[in-house]
Length: 188
Image 1 (cartoon, rainbow, N blue to C red):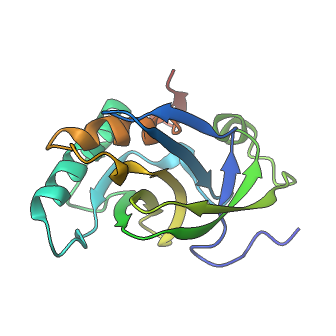
Image 2: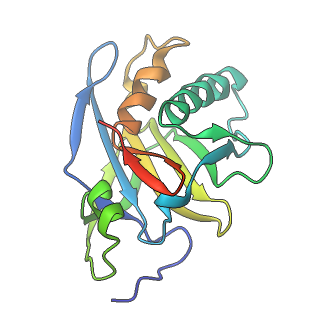
């Protein structure tokens, strides 16, 4: 099977859909995709791409702080010099059609790196207020993992700590730990 669908297209769906409760009520849909092109055993450091939210620097700061906390909890270090991963995030304020893929659970794939693994396309209709977090291989500029949560803007009471729970729900889908002397670890 041709594994090259473009830098930002080769994503695959791992695991089953997870639905969790969002802060303040309502249902939050959380899922993730990953690329077979990722070198997950090699990543140790990260840094952020510029925030694209023109209307709220506070929103950027809250989301970025929550992401930084989750990455550091997994052993990744912030690096201003040659990070392995670049982190991008965006909130889609309107409904979004998104293509994902069903494939092996990411931690199982990382252990085996099965070049013959297959995947099946799944199309999602995500509601307004989808937060999408992308991990990008800094060397190839290829998205190697995306986590996303939909329906998060349905809570009219969100405050400055609102995004911590949402970002954690997204990163619960990323069980990998930063490498340590060439070994790969897994979270929970």
